[in-house]
Structure formats: C-alpha cells, structure tokens
Length: 283
Ligand code: C2E
Ligand code: CA
Ligand code: CA
Image (cartoon, rainbow, N blue to C red):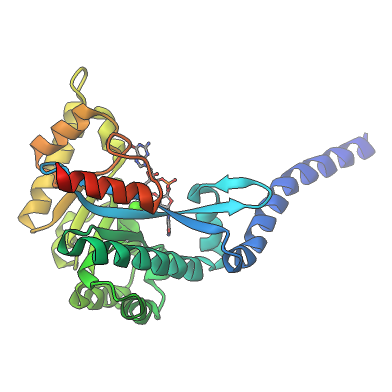
C-alpha cells in the first residue's frame, strides 16, 4: 500500500509538472522568439461613434509559434510579466506600432489615427520608460499626439509616485494616456482628477447589459456615470467590446466618443486598417 501511495504521488507530480514544463518551455523560448521575429502585431480600430471615422487603433500582440501555431496574448503576456521579458517585448511592440502609425501619418496627415499601445505593470515601473518612448518617437518620426499608452487601473493605482511622474512626463511630451478596462478594478474615482489621463476605456464586461431586449439598468447606470465623470474631467471615452449595432447606438446616445469591438472590426492587418481609414474618409 505504501508503494502504491508513493506511485500516486509520483503520478500527480508528473501530471502537474507536465503543464509546468510546458509553461517553462514557453517562457524560456520567448527571448529567441523575439529575436527571430515570431511576434507580430494586429490592429483594431477605435471608431468614432458619430462620424464613423477611425479615430485610433489599438496594437495587440500575437505570437506565431513554430510548433504551437498562433498564440494569443492571454497565453504568454502573463509569463512575460513573470520573467520580466515583457519589458523588451513591450518595447518591441511599441516600436512596431510607432513605425506603423508613422506610415498612416505620412499617408493621411492630421486625419491619421493615433496608435494605442498596452503598457504592462512592469513597463510602467521601468525607469527607462520615458527615455524609451522619447527615443522611439524620435527614431520613427511619429507625432507624439499620435501615440496613446493604455494602462489598467490597477497598474496606475499600484504605482508609487515615481511612475506617476513618468506618466506626467509622457503627457507633457504630448503622448496620450488611457486607462484600460475602466470600471473593473477598485477605482478611486476621486483620484482620477490628479492623473495625467486623456481617455477612459470602459471595460467590455459592461456591454452585456447594454441591449434593447433586456437592458440591465445597473450596467447602463454605471456606464452613464463613468461617462459623465470622464466628461466632467475633460476626458474622452471609448466603449470596449462593442459587438452589436444596439450597443454601438446606445453607447453613442450615452455620449461615448469612440467604440471598439467586433461590431466595427476584429483585430487585423495594417492593410485591413488602411482600407477602413480610406473607406471612412470617402463616405
Ligand atoms: P485588452 O487590452 O483589453 O484588449 C482588448 C481585447 O479584447 C483583445 O483581446 C481584443 O481582441 C478583444 N476584443 C476586441 N473586440 C472584442 C469584442 O467585441 N468582443 C470580445 N469578446 N472581445 C473583443 P486580445 O488581443 O486577445 O488581447 C488580450 C489582452 O492581452 C489585452 O486585453 C491586453 O491586456 C493584453 N495585450 C495584448 N497585446 C498586448 C501588448 O502588446 N502588451 C501588453 N502588456 N498586453 C497586451
Ligand atoms: Ca488595451
Ligand atoms: Ca481593454
């Protein structure tokens, strides 16, 4: 019986470590993957709810893994945060996105969309952040006003004074700052007025209750309140996760400036974005 028990533990250990080993391998292969350009960026438009123009474009990273195929960020961003690779991966995404936005800036001038890049907690605490952003803007020639950085509430709230100073410095350079997934964290709403923020992105989780058949009055009330507060503070609002025409219409009525979601477009290639910009400009 003792031997049997021991075997069971061995079996359990083996099973657990199979996943751990897989995760570990994935982590360990990330630096080489970055070097071999296995990562790529897709773009999803932030569409003006009135003019239906492409106001901005969010950069979303993907990994084309040689054995596992296409991996979404939910598979590897967490791992990259743990190992710290997120700092160099994030910098790579930022550079990619800024080069791309610069092409749009050259083709469309002032009408070009801004590019919105996600910043992980580790990046927001990186002492090199401001210098990196300044260098990439200089290198690419992108107008700082055409760059937006997205941070989650928890990333902003968990940051000490120094990273907040970094955000202020970025805002002074003309870079837009957005709060991502707004309404899902433990927001300190009063604190908002002291943050160098230009845009709130209302979390997609609220969209479930935004509908014509069975609207959820609480979801709708929360969204209204957030939008009102944002406007009082002079911020613009993007509704995330807009999947239906009803949601787009209701969010426009509530006063959101822009919407992002499958109703408008799935994340896609720069070419797909370009067609959208061209189409919205000629309508
Ligand atoms: P996020 O920043 O909230 O990005 C929005 C996510 O919602 C994206 O998932 C997007 O594809 C998805 N989405 C867009 N429209 C809809 C819709 O109508 N319905 C639904 N259900 N989903 C929609 P994705 O691309 O898988 O990215 C997941 C998360 O990974 C992102 O969430 C972001 O937190 C993170 N991420 C992506 N790229 C980067 C990056 O370059 N750096 C960092 N630090 N994080 C990133
Ligand atoms: Ca985001
Ligand atoms: Ca989001």
